[in-house]
Image (cartoon, rainbow, N blue to C red; front, side, top):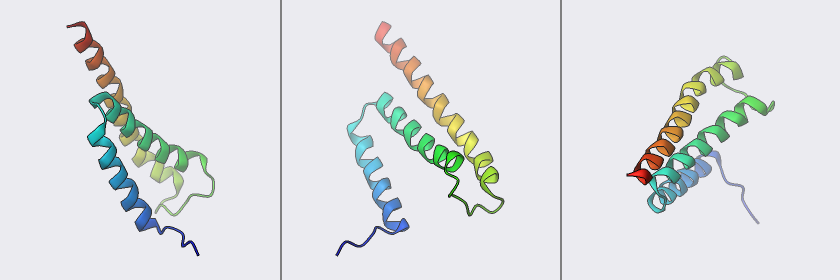
Length: 89
């Protein structure tokens, strides 16, 4: 019988997988990983009507995720610029 993974187990596993992946990725790929994870969480909250449970509703959670999403996007694009600048040196 297969027991479903608990929320805590899922979070722990994904955190471990992210750490393992980070050790094998180049700096620009790590930025892409961060961007993908943050965007995935934000998009899940934004577009999945079944999600809920935030203290003040989904909009409350989205307002708090927006600066994190923006930071991940900025980091990703700054990393691409740094990689391009490094390639031209």
